[in-house]
Length: 155
Image (cartoon, rainbow, N blue to C red):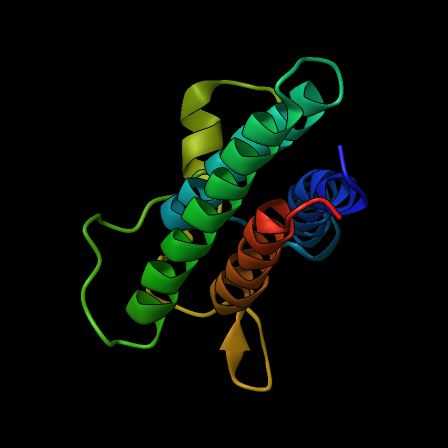
């Protein structure tokens, strides 16, 4: 693997790890519970993280890194869709739902006591950009950088 490939591999591991870490920090540290579309954005990052880890042990490494970048890009595109729903640019495909996990007790208690999280409301933003918007920006840019690094010719 070239130095560009190794950098792409490290980015493919770091980006989903950091974004998922941030999502869980927001959820458990700041009560920013995920809506259904937030979960849609997390799943491709879980897959990308697994694929990036596989790239460290199984050949062809570049293939696994490229697949991980595809997962990161997928999450970013879902983030763009979610941000559009939050900003009322279009309607979402799903009803808002509550996906907060129960901390023991009965399922009925968990349902009745869990906070309702709407997909079309921004829970947190910075400079007018929601978390879904930041996921779009970071994930999409990172995936493009990874693909560019993988496309470089060995010198």
